[in-house]
Image (cartoon, rainbow, N blue to C red; front, side, top):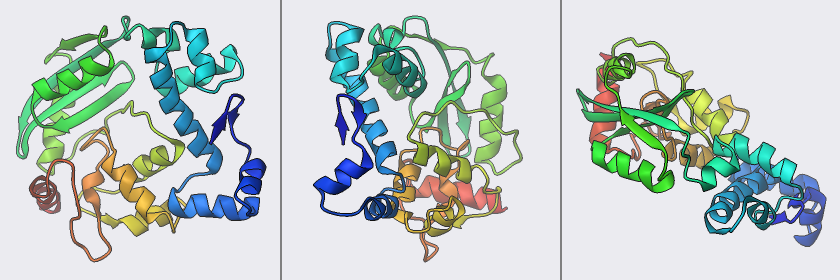
Length: 256
């Protein structure tokens, strides 16, 4: 899907697959909910992470990841990684991540925030989350600051109890399609639900139901991006990363 100059052109890919460009675009939209170019960019972002960890220099990583110029590498990689390639390869030494934990009606909730918003909200043990963050950004400064996070944790408690809460800023990175799905989820009012098909239709991708389900499953910011409000077409709860019991409890609280 990518070459040294970037994602493969749709016309070339279509020719290699012996189909029309229009058919290729349609197939990508039906199965993945994104364009071939967006898929190529997502693959290259993954390659960027791998290359930065393995290469001896940022320049080497740029070409290993399929970028034709260093400038393009820095501009796109910084936007997709949330930091410059130099910072990433150094383990994000200048980045301070604040985190806190709160007891809620559905169990312990851990939140991690960057200066731009919530980067992670998870229902589980604080030690697990801290370990995951340390593994990806070993030189970042990870600080537990309950005072600074007090308003955020209060809002998350309210969301767990089905109470009204201010909209929380998020700093979640994903593909263009994931971003559209996550934005649509934030439009679902508390106390209401949508099916995966309805979410797909709301973003103009009515056939991308499976891709919507995958975007919900990879949501890094639980509660603030309420993927628990999405159900199967038959009304069943479907899967939830933190367990069906938690999902059911959240919906019961919200409906009450």
